[in-house]
Image (cartoon, rainbow, N blue to C red; front, side, top):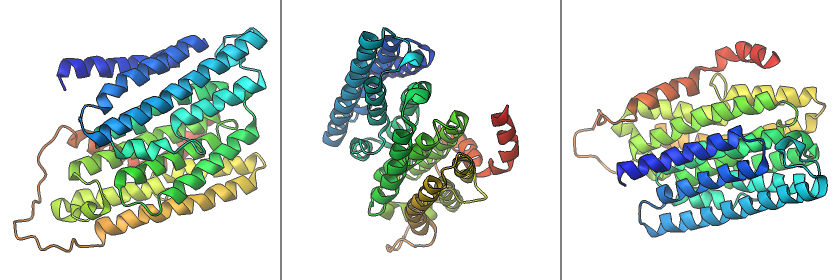
Amino acid sequence: MNPYVLTVLLSSLGLGTVLTFASSHWLLAWMGLEINTLAIIPIMAQQHHPRAIEATTKYFLTQATAAAMILFASTTNAWLMGEWEIHQLSHPLATTTVMLALALKLGLAPVHFWLPEVLQGLELTTGLILSTWQKLAPFALMIQTAPTINSSLLVAIGLLSTLVGGWGGLNQTQLRKILAYSSIAHLGWMVLILQFAPSLTLLSLSLYIIMTSSAFLTLKTNNALTINTLATSWTKSPTLAALAALVLLSLGGLPPLSGFMPKWLILQELTKQGLPLSATLAAMTALLSLYFYLRLCYALTLTIYPNTLTATAPWRLNFTMITLPLSIITILALGLLPLTPAVTAMLAL
């Protein structure tokens, strides 16, 4: 793609998200979401491959449907209650419709079916943008409207998402689909705690973005798209393969890695709020996700690719632009757990 065109598209992508962040009026927020969607469509379709075009079409249709639902809900609320402000969303029909529309935009269960298929048709860099940056604008709206949404609906969507995210990834062999189901499960944890502690949702979202970025950049460096090709990573770069396994365990939420922090704090907060059953169910569904992360770790570090490599082992990777960001993000994805007391102190302020 022409670098000038790419610059314009990425600038529009940023503009749409920032516009949604800054808006207090539903029409302005909707406009930001539309700019955001229209900017990423050409980036997704730049491969000119049938799978990429199919994924782009599916993404456009789902995002257009969600945007139409948001516009319908905000118009309904303005008609019945006389308010266009995002914070003043008060009619039950409008709040439920907005919640379902934002769930569709994010890929939360039960409206998650588009996310694995779309992510599977994209290259890893575009998939990274879709899994991280594209979640920010809908989440900003969800955090603003959360106080007016029925808490039982949020808890139900959160638990269902963690279950679907864990269950759906069990039988996958494509790494992009596994990361899509991982995304659904992590978003479920964020929605679960959204109404009780929004600061924990932001913490969980930040760590999810760090860990997912590290996973995507590692796969891009190794040029791995399936579990079978992942098994050759140890030959290419043993250090990167070992770190990738730790990043996957961090995504699974194992201590003493960074991914344990949000799960630990969320389970603690759910117990404080008198929801021990929800906390137990969430912890049990996390075991499902942990299984397929362990499966990837097994393929990555404990198996040797069946082919005999006659060439000299390529111990050094070619220098690429992503090496420095990958190293920084990987350090953050692995070593932030000791900062938990400082984080809890900041959240308590």
